[in-house]
Amino acid sequence: MTPRNKPEALYLHVPFCRSICYYCDFTHVMYRKETADAWLDALEKEFASREFNPGLKTVYIGGGTPTSLSEEQLERLLSFLDPYTSHVSEYTCEINPETMNETKAQILFQHGVNRVSIGFQTDNAKLLKNMGRHHTVNDVKHVMDLLRKTGISNISLDLMYSLPEQTMEDLETAIRTAVSLNPSHLSLYSLTVEENTVFGKRGYKSLDEEMEADMYEYICQTLPSYGFHQYEVSNFAKDGFESQHNKVYWTYRDFYGVSCGASGKEGYTRYDVTSSLKKYLENPLERDEILLEKEDAMFEMVMMNLRLKAGMEKSLFEETFGIRFEEAFRGKYETLTEQGLLEVSQTHVKCTEKGFPVLNSVLEELL
Image (cartoon, rainbow, N blue to C red; front, side):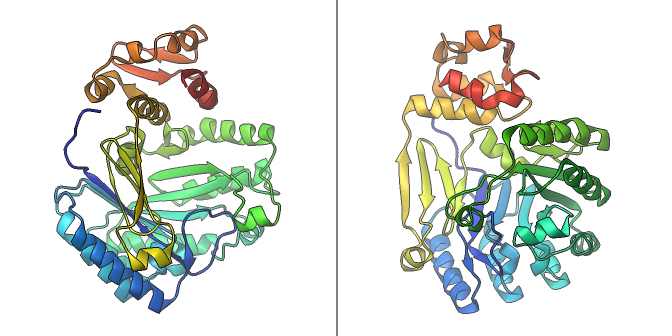
């Protein structure tokens, strides 16, 4: 892989939650003030021990629940990032409406956060309760009003579908409610039940594949009528509001991963910071590293880029690996183009309208 400049994107993971969502498989522990203070001490050591690009373009704070931190702790967290955010164009923080208030909104704004992602999930009270969520639609609306009043107007909402007991009507209602709140971006994810989640331990299952496919088709056909164009498998945006940070992942560019439970990629190395909070507190630099083979990296780059409607820039592939896409995947991509699933132009490789819904099958053929 051709050496690149320092990453221009940084992801920071906050591993705390005030309550646990039944579907969540990300690194998280229940919030306790003393533990969060100890985590901030370890995080300060990590920042002091690592070198980060002072010219970052995007920063994303996720979790867990970043807003589960107290106001003082949130202020301290953001102060660690201040030296690196003077050139940031998109600065995102995930928000749970259950743990947000006006003071926290002002703290985010004062430190340069200009985009938030809110866990809306659905407007159905019963489904929310079944997911372990404690907010209402009015809570989400209140938080969005509060953020806009503070000066943060670029707001993304997360929605979930294929939830246990969810009907197509439930989904249709949730989408209508979500767009009525006038977000600039929507992420819609189908439920995947992981073993170590509450859903997994209780034996819950997502809906059958046919219903899930029908829901996805409805989403893709409906959201454009509300002004949201699909630019990635699960993501829809109004013009000018595509997630620049997430596009770093999808175009296979490098990014820093910071804190317990975060992942990063720099050159040929992909790494996972320890997901054990206990180990992180003992050594905030402990992480597992994977050295990528060239062939693996080439496939990963194609795999991530094909998630985008626009597909992959062939020049970026050739610049990165010193080989043309057609040479690297000769004998594999031709079948897909003949089947009308893949389109290879002079400048891009992308899934066709027929291929995009069966992306996994396209990737299996390339692999």
